[in-house]
Image (cartoon, rainbow, N blue to C red; front, side, top):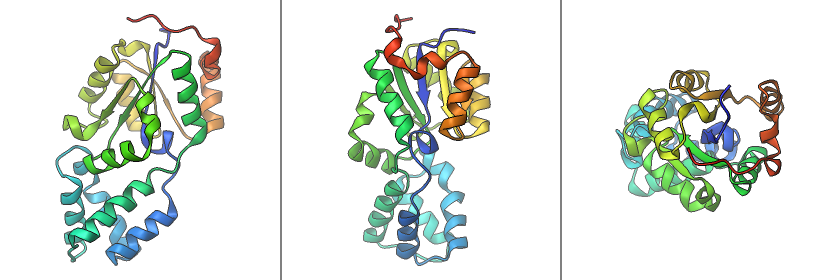
Length: 218
């Protein structure tokens, strides 16, 4: 197995916790939609939003139209803010681990499917994102996981060969695509099983990054 020189994180459901129920309830209140209508509209256009085919404003207007409604500019602003809150409850064990890796001099990055308004909100709200060597936001490339080109771009921006990158994502199709792109990859389900998988693969030493010397540049 190739030595791991960089850790590449998904954001949603890896660095972030599951969606905040209170923020989802705010989305329902603002839209006036029932659960089924909001779920359908929210996810129907999400990939296009993440891929940069829709802006945040356009996305919410599409959601409105799909539910037979329309939103004012103020409603759209409130929806964008609630959507940011939905995905910014933190998975503290992984956030803390990323920080320890950075302090140990191990290169870290983020590869996330995310739209423009969401990215702006994350960067505004979470100043610790500045500690990552590079963040690949899908909308900026007009690509999205599991397209292979986005993994190749992330590896190039990390300046680390794909074989020496460990990618962590909650979705099996994204993990499989990372492996196809030449990366090592683990599907994140929960912290205990993740740490067990790291140990099984002989990567347990990375869980205590203070004991790891800073990697040399490739």
